[in-house]
Length: 209
Image 1 (cartoon, rainbow, N blue to C red):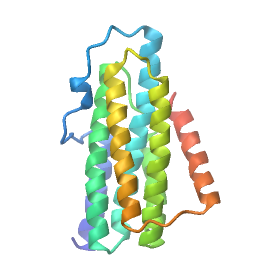
Image 2: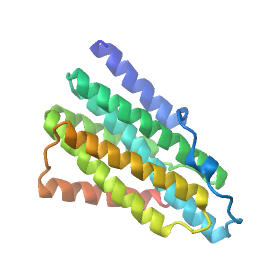
Image 3: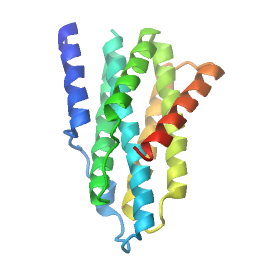
Image 4: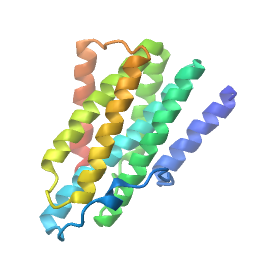
């Protein structure tokens, strides 16, 4: 694609992400989850808060991958980012649908999360393929750990949410492995710490807003 086409594609993705227009290409893991007993009100609220945080993470993933695709001229790297973004769009659709089933909403700050993540992804992409891939690998590693913490906290009876989170963890681990195999460099410790602090701020805010 030309530079103009790439910019228009990124703009289209942003609008589709924020409008909830992404459709999953794979069936939701929740569809095959074992039926569970009705969740108590406090369990439903906890599940919804955690799934809202996960949905925000997928909004950010769309922004990051699309910004990094825009920032690189490496066709192979662009294809890798685009393939990962397609899988992340499944996560986006699955978490949004689960929030609807839990009778709750997505974060009111999604436009802010998208804009911030896009800027970070664009910067990472401009620093070269090794750094860009290193950023992907570290991001996915932190997301995988974050999802594991959600599995530990989700109500045992919420099989649907747990099935979604488990599949997301598997996909994120594969994205990180693919990035390392493609030449990711290890990011400096202070950068990793800054990423963790930013993620903590986002998750604590999205839990409620």
